[in-house]
Length: 232
Image 1 (tube, rainbow, N blue to C red):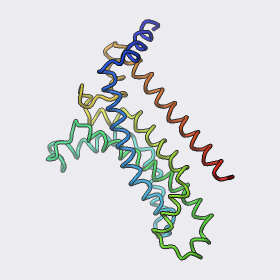
Image 2: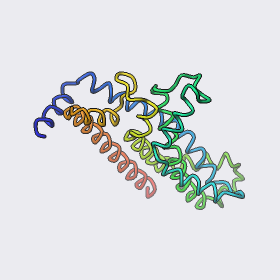
Image 3: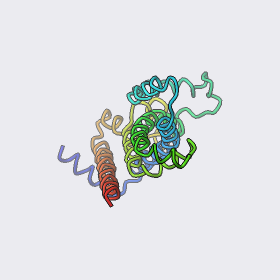
Image 4: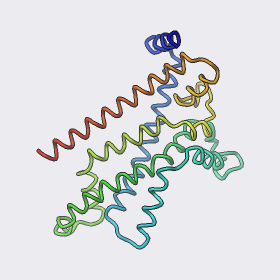
């Protein structure tokens, strides 16, 4: 174990090209998926926060339930749609980074939508009278809430990114873990561990843990900034 950790540290510090290719692909896929999920999820969350309609409760139940989507099920659904016999097979996206982005986006969009809805709904209750006095439209209310809750929503986005970058089940189904094409940190760790290549698996694990620590540290920093701004 000590030798494996020593070799893993050497791989990280030496700038091994294969190692950093995997890391950079992981970050690129997860960041793009998070950006798309934020665009969709924040729009849904803000709309639900300012809207009252018949069946709203059922919609909230569905969105909250989708937060616990099993990754392998998402991977299977995306696979069936992107496979050659599927409705989107003509696009040729299966076993590409794009397919992985699609799977991750589907996984984290409900998380961002549900968490942002709760944050923005609480803000909406606080500002409801002001909105009525200003005669703001629904779009205007959504914009105002998104801006005022930007710090809290940033933590939601970071939570979504953390969920995406740690994903393995869905991406390995639709990405195939192809070397130099779709191999990301989580799938590489699983593969290298099964092959007995512990140094590379540990090196990737160290980097993944570092990313998780950085993300959580940034979340705490954003929360502190938001708290200070609220009391300023």
